[in-house]
Image (cartoon, rainbow, N blue to C red; front, side):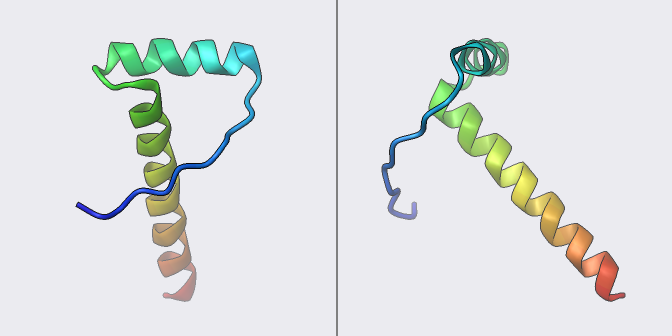
Amino acid sequence: MAEKKAFVLRVNPDVLKELEAWGADEFRSTNGQIEYLLQQALNDRKKAARKKKA
């Protein structure tokens, strides 16, 4: 597994509550849920960039 880099994330308390609940619904930690969502967004961005080139 790749090494992970820790950093501070400031987030609105209401957004954090929603992320915690969403993560729990999907059996992920809050950190895991944030990481999952970021990875999904990056994958979607890459797909869109490939479509744009084609």
